[in-house]
Image 1 (cartoon, rainbow, N blue to C red):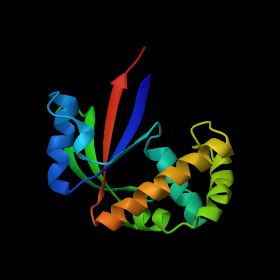
Image 2: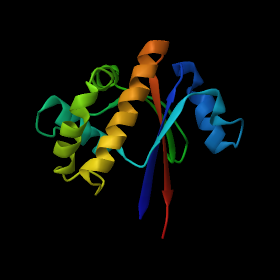
Image 3: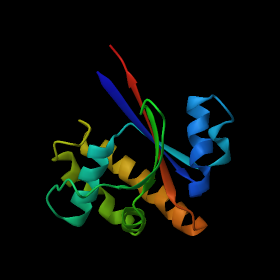
Length: 149
């Protein structure tokens, strides 16, 4: 089965190759960039974005804006997170986090997590997105896929 993990970094787009190199070539480390590790994939993040906007799930509602780099086998990708998503979640009032998490928990793409766990994740993403805006740098998403039997 395929396991998907997502790690976000506050980094400039020119750092995409360096980010991927840490995984692909075991060069350097992630310590140079603020990061947030998520055990979520695109569908879960898309479901969060949909819930935040109060709309129904649409495949065009991706939080991924631009593919900046993909490894030859496709197991590592660096994607720029949609600036609209970053701005929206950074602007989410803290008191709205629980409401968003409760709605997300009802979605089939909630990673099987309870509302309390999702509220913690929403809060972490909210703070991280706010840091990105403060630093005036985009959020880059490092996606790694591995096959586990």
